[in-house]
Length: 281
Length: 281
Image (cartoon, rainbow over all chains, first blue to last red; front, top):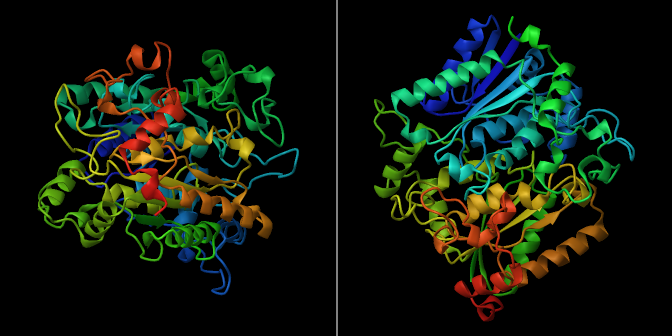
């Protein structure tokens, strides 16, 4: 299989980049093809601006969805974005490796999403009407592929637990896992999160590396997070609210967008993509 | 009073920048002093990297917390960051105005947070021990000041409602409102969110502008979101989990970090900061 690894840490010797190296080595050992994009090494341009749309007349306003949609459709995106989109289409799986800065991605990685996820590629895909709001949340350009986060965090696990002061890690990552990865179609795997990242001794790193290697070996085998598909019948249209039949009448919040029985749902969803047989090839 | 408005949209004629202009005019009409930072106009550098720490020897690893803490303490941060920190210290209130891109801030604004929020300024403040984990979440450098988001979003209100497909807007904004604003001490006001931002006619804009003007007039009067203070007795140390006495034994998730009675708590918290008399001066 083919895997794209995108990393975002400015220090080549950082834990993020050490874990990236562990992941890449494990994937290569499984016989996979791997491409790595180190956003700092290529000095990725973060901000969406007029320079991204050289064909846009100076007299015209920069409406980002319209401009990016026109540039995508007309083959006039900048070369860095074209190459990144080609990498995403090439890969069967995407891994994003980054430190959790202020409870989200570093700006350089957010800027990779903002610029590469153009209209027509990652959103504005499929029929948009009052009865069908496009192909998204489980459908779209990247459907059938898998995605996973590798995240380093400074605090303790309890700080990110169900009652921890920072908020539960799954909820902090929901805007990324659901809003960035599931949105254009990815099956999203449980994240690999490393806590106390600034206090890691050699023994802990070895244990962490072994656990990450195991996750890489099972990349195409383990069940995805059972996020509900927009067009799978669980949502009303066009209000796009959860139906009572789907989540119960009282369920609210991020959790309600995950189906109730992760294991069963996960194995069903897994069968949509790659079989576990292929996973270990 | 003094207000810093930071905006992040690449189109000068965008809804975000139009709302910024409405807010600034309303604040000036109230007699406030206002500073505006348009991150696109100043071509803000987004990525944290070695260029931010010119005093760091080339032979040394870039450990971001250590490097930013040393640069902050030694007065060796870059001039753009020094100026932004001075603006934050100057202002009694901070307003961040931005379009919701992929359920978070545009990269250029995330990069403003990543770079301006140095160790010693926004984190790593106060005593750190097993019994006190610093001054944060309601305490810290920016305590006593107020902060508020002005956000434009493309979808419908129902899509961001309690059962909406994108997730509830308050939860999507939690990593920013709690993790970025409350963390260094701000009292965080309810956000001003505009939906269907790409389909706004003149009449809707006028209604929206009037509502925003009202929010600007009450900037120092309305209750803040009653996030629980880290050192207010609601959390165990050092695990930093909610005590049963504070939130009940079963409460989990983002909501549990807001006190149960917003109105009552809000008015108590409001009294810590600026009185409503000053608000309308």
